[in-house]
Image (cartoon, rainbow, N blue to C red; front, side, top):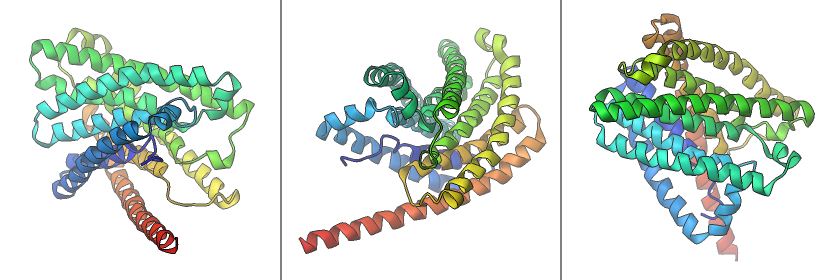
Length: 343
């Protein structure tokens, strides 16, 4: 409990997005199974997070203000919206997704000011660069996840609420786009001026690709919204940006695979289970879903075909990491039991 990772909701993000992709592909039984796992994990993690905040408040505050993992708390926002989008796709219901959207919007606003403020207040200049890593991109992902859920619900809402959701979708998409660019520049500056050790080039850097992929999905959703004043202004540039970001996310995949091979094969960084692995699974699933949806929204069948095939790769990686999680958990329980008996 004391060491619960700030980015624990990445498991919800990863499982939920693959469930959504399977739903789009008509593989309903497996999709529903993953939906149940997603919802159960979300509820459990909410309880554990609140409990940890009550039991270890100082530890939580330290996590918030630490540059290398403070931004991982945005996984709560993204996980909430991914779950909401999956529930909305299941039967068209809007009540639960609207509640989840309200919760995530409030958390996004609060965290968007609190975490950068605490990090900047605790670290100065070079110290911030030293702690900057792939988890910072989750801030952009959280913003884009708001756009995804808002745009998904907008066509089902009455006129007044529909206008409000269209504004939220477009604004959060734009904010996420700017954050992606700013954080990307900061990572490049760190790489060129300080370098990034192999040990730090872990799974969270896959969020670089995931942030681009969710920008594609959010943009495709916005293009399909009803013709409100806000949407009419941005529809064409958003559609173009979605294609550009899909191309960039595609280009990043071989680079990220190459970094992983270099990290483990050449630099001999041990390969072991860690919670941040879900920060790699989520981008894989998001890339697949973004491709499927972009192919339908913009009539790009080759993009949809690539997304459909990539979904199975994402599902295979999810299964491997999930089994790895269970095995690691059982091993830890046995070690603790042995230690307690020895004591």
